Amino acid sequence: MTLSASDFWDFSLKVYPDWQQTLLLLQDDYDLNINLLLFCLYLEQRNQRLSAQQMATLMQNCEQTRPLLMSLREVRRAAKGVNQQAYSQLKQAELELEKQQQQALIRAANSMQFSEVQGKGNLQSYVELKQLTDSEALQKLLNKLVY
Image 1 (tube, one colour):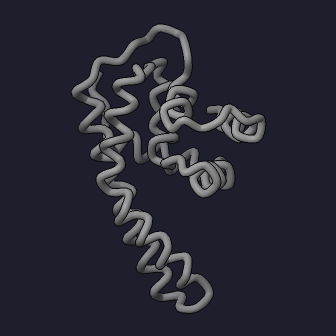
Image 2 (image 1 turned 180 degrees about the horizontal axis):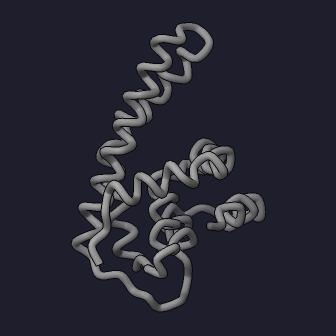
């Protein structure tokens, strides 16, 4: 099955408002990529599982835009409350870069074969590859991401 970048973006726009606080905590406190978290959930919704190697490939894919995104996010956060026009423009630029990152994820994923076998979820595989400790606080946050 071919995945669609616009379908993934629409999914993200639909679920993000409900999960925003949790996703931002996972990003800021655990250094997890929101697009990868959303992609894990997007695939799980379709009963598709990533192997550890596929997840590692997608993580590496996201690392290409990470420095620019992190810099842009830092400047945007600094502008909040100081210069609303600059903040809005930086937020738009960050969203555009996030969208491009999602498109790159879809391109990479469309060259992969997914498993439909039940097993360890995509989110858990991502957390393990990030070598995060299996803390109760982290699991509580991940459990909030239920579609």
